[in-house]
Length: 415
Image (cartoon, rainbow, N blue to C red):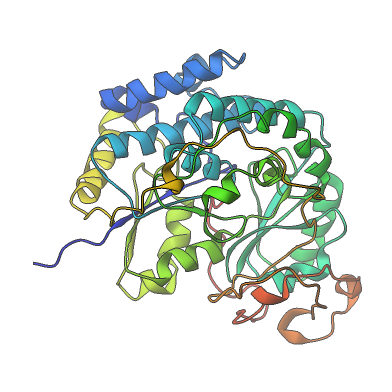
């Protein structure tokens, strides 16, 4: 009998939140309930009293706001992931999207849960006064949407070769959406009230550096992949406070990161968070469509009662428990505790207009600016005749090019 493939846990970010997410599991699974209570209590110590509204599945004007969505996403991701680890599952890798990367790092042992919540609470405080904005999922490649970007409206996420998100202030994002729809592109607003992963947030995000330089970090004890710099995160990188501080303003390269996770072996990709947006994206990956790897969600796509969420979780968990554990990581300096993260020299804000494509084979190396053609390589006309934003030259290979409106639909909750 063929052994099941190893497990990779995926953690979603802003846009995946839904009223009542995980509440059914909370009532059905005592282990998850204990973990969720543990992390919610940490948030309460920072002035975020979220438990009652969350359990009541209340939807209000701040459901998608910073002070509600971000803490609950982190908490649910961490509590689901921690419950999986408590069951004895040892994943071959952890990969998070946006705030999901902080949850993944905490589960990997980079941060203590209390420190991670402190970092997230501080981040929220820094970003609260930034201009309103949002994110726009577009069924297109990064090169196709580049003519519609500006200095402030940029490609904020690359989730797949033809699944990107624009991010920026509200007025500019609305203009881009109108022009893209007029040109026949399929677009959908992400549930976000802030311009995550756009340069508009750079200055505010970097104000988190004072706290981050005092937080104790450790090298990851579980294989941890980054969606900001696709590839495994090393102990040296996690010690850099600017890496963590700049994340709200940097583009998320989930697609290229997933390519790397799937490059070495077949795995079970398990989304350990609300919705199944990342599961939907993963099921469209060639390694999954060919039948080698698989993608499952630990929670249903939409919140349900205790029997629905409990049954879905137990079924998925049974599959993960049967998977083999990865080979032990080398011991020594990687597992030794580090001192508080300190800046290692001057560094400017993240490149605000780095817009890589969802290449299947990301080329290593630093960013390089390169001109971008319009759709299907033709010179842009009309609104597309504006100056295009640069892209990382090393990630332009193997980009799928086709006319607007073709390809897969824009999935819900794919942030």
